Length: 385
Image 1 (cartoon, rainbow, N blue to C red):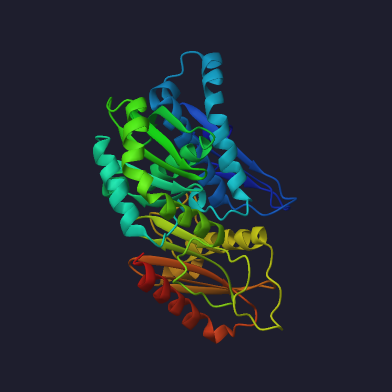
Image 2 (cartoon, rainbow, N blue to C red):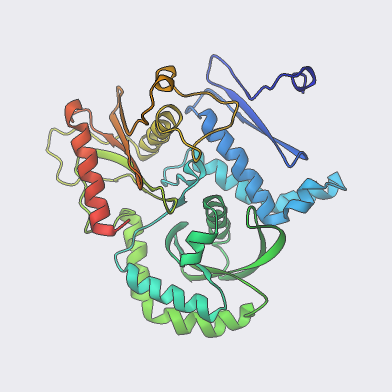
């Protein structure tokens, strides 16, 4: 505030101990402030900025933009914001959890690639049509397993992320009828979100109008369209416990974790193997899942803020984290690597995908590119992702 009064713009603060404070003003109405301590894991400025954006989107999702942009009664707003606390807590928990959620950072949908995708897609499309909706989604443990075409093409990636968090937060309910405001698509007019638990951990949801009623959808439509797919859904649950990739994809034993992003659909798959398959006896033990995911987040931030800079990964106009040397070249970097004391990291991008891989230190540095390109080809060939 002091800087703004003197014509200066201050975007963030950082201490020698890697503590950070960042903030943002939304709709010229509310200022959100994020603070990270330096005692534990490092949290990047990009991650804190994305946190602020996600928190704002969650607030709009639940309360609507009008309530936030035109505050008439502060005490009433404080009470209403309590309904957002659970969503905000989940966003904070995902920063350091070991479940592999990356959507809060990448602003891409965390996905599961099921083995029986065509059957589930057909069931979801039919269910959404019967519910008079073009927007339907099947989630397994908070990850999108299938979605209708309009869910991907008409909703923004940020909306898909916060909707997935909302449905995941309602996992204790067998069904719900929840009014939501789409942060970009419909910030001032509420839309119905119908969500149903098909199995513990499996939810199907649709965005729809006044019809059908929750009672009709639960009593008539759920059984009609999903009862025959119970085994397929159980198979998805079992797969989710092992990996986000189908069993047909076999990764090298020396890959510790990876993040694959489809840049066109803004979908992402995170893989963090629990055990090494086919590893030699002298292989070093895997780092903990939490540590590998932390390293993957840090490497993603390193790559997209220094090399893979684009509109989709820019932090703010005030942030200039790109390396100085890259500004003197006309080409766009398409690959980068990093060697640390714990692992070797490699990233590559093309027009459709971005891949970020953490590998064992035993992998020769000159072989990193081949391992990454072969991994990308293996996943896309087997899944069509």
